[in-house]
Structure formats: C-alpha cells, structure tokens
Image (tube, rainbow, N blue to C red; front, side):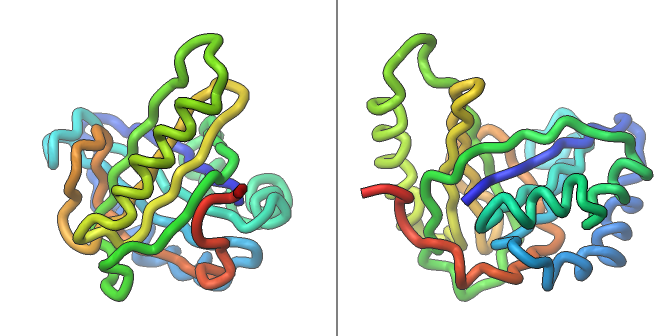
Length: 196
C-alpha cells in the first residue's frame, strides 16, 4: 500500500464553495479508478474547527504504485490539479497498516491527520511499533470509519489518517471536512499490519 496527499493552501478570502463545487462535479471521476483503494476529498476552512487556513488536501491510499503513477504522470487525473492550481508537492508514505473501524457502515463526514517525525538518528523499530499500538487503539475507537498508518523513510515521518463517521474526534492536530469518499478497490486493501 502507498499513501499520498497533496495540500493546496488557498488565500484567506478564497471562496471555498469553488472547491465544494469542484468535488461535487468531479469527485465521481475516481469512484472506479484502477488501483485506488480510496480517495478522501478533504478540506480545511479558515476559522472552522480550529483551521488557520483554507486548504484542499485529498488523501489517497493505493493498492500499488501502478495506479498512483498513472494518476500522477500517466494522464490519469493529476493534470486537472496542475491546470487549475499549479503543481503541488506530493507527500507519499509506505503503507504500514489499514483497518476499518466500528463505524465502517456509516458514510464518513470528517477526517483527522497526525504527522510526527521520528527522533533524529533513532532506529525506526521502536517509534513505529509505538505508533502501531496507538493506531490499533484508534482503529477500535467509537466513531472511527477507518484508519491508516504510513511511514516516509526518506524524511522519517509517520502519518496517521482517520476517517470519522460524524464530527472528528481525538486529539490529532489536523482536522478536515470530508466532502466525498471514492472507494473503488476498498475491499482489496489488506487489513491489518503490512508485516508479521
């Protein structure tokens, strides 16, 4: 699995209805995208739920790199982002764990994200093992639709994304409204940790 996210930070006075309309009109285009486990169309709006910025920040979980590569440079969708907003940096992480939560039967409406750097120079085994323990606890929490844990071994960073059935809960610092969830290959995503 491969997790991916880009963040398009917009001016403070930007009319976020433009982004809402964009997702309403185009979100369905990834509902059958080959290789895509899920795409969460996420937004933060300045002044809402503690957000300091207006931001469009979709998060993807891919089953393999083929679909991700096709999306980014194979003419499979990223060109629309580049044409409308310019080319953003794309964060990507190796998927370490994925699990649907107790509220998986409900349509998710919110998401939270935690990004944390691993201690400089530290052996990654311990911090990743601790993050996986916290991820397991999160996956079982009431209101959780699903949660993902992934690691960037270039910058040594852990990311945890949680989709929530209703309002975002927990103490993760980044909180989003979820406008649409595409799940073409959700059922094919491996559940649990990605190694013994």
